[in-house]
Amino acid sequence: MSDPSNSNDVTQAQAEEAVRTLLRWAGDDPSREGLLDTPRRVVKAYRDWFCGYAEDPSEYLKRTFKEVEGYDEMVVLRDIEFESHCEHHMAPIIGRAHVGYLPTNRVVGISKLARVVEGYARRFQVQEKLTAQIAHCIQEHLKPAGVAVVVDASHECMTTRGVHKRGVSMVTSQMLGAFREDARTRAEFLQFIGIHGAR
Ligand SMILES: Nc1nc2c(ncn2[C@@H]2O[C@H](COP(=O)(O)OP(=O)(O)OP(=O)(O)O)[C@@H](O)[C@H]2O)c(=O)[nH]1
Ligand SMILES: [Zn+2]
Image (cartoon, rainbow, N blue to C red; front, side, top):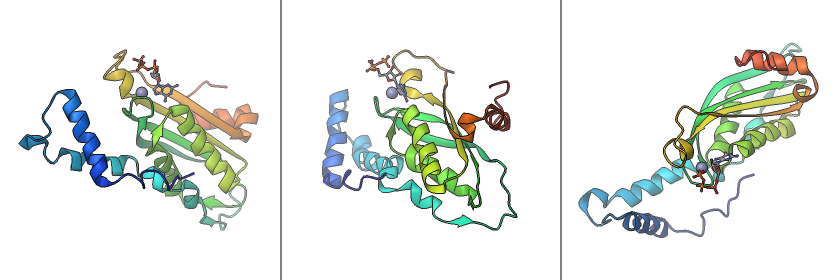
């Protein structure tokens, strides 16, 4: 759920001052010409990266369509690119989400699945939580027969710092309903997204 109290008690000036403090702490001079506008830019960038706090992703699932001639097979949106930030280091998490669901008698506009991913990604996250939030939001508000979410992402906190392992990606999945209970349904989804042989 969104948390509207978040950031409301912090002014733009305070946020910019925090950036100046970090610049000074890193060893630079925030008053030199090249850095003068940086706090303003960083705060603007944060508004973009963390706009998910101002959203309630379930809102995107309110509008559904029933005239689908009884279509009740799997719907999969794969390769949804996203950018997030890890809550441990505030470093970028860059990856793709694959989302599938089994409609009962209504479907949702397909872009809305990507909007749900965005709404949760644009917050401080751990990948497991992001994966679970996307799946539970769809299950709770669309009430399909099942939801499957796979997230495959690279964490800059372990590529550009710390253990410095490039080319490593983290894969998480949250299966609910039929995708959890029925191995064939799960296998079909994994085949659709290009992960074969899994049971
Ligand atoms: N499970 C999980 N771990 C994450 C995620 N993002 C970052 N981490 C890990 O969170 C851990 C935080 O560990 P700490 O030992 O507290 O932090 P640290 O000293 O900076 O650790 P290093 O990254 O190993 O240098 C690290 O192992 C990160 O790789 C995530 O989305 N999920
Ligand atoms: Zn991290």
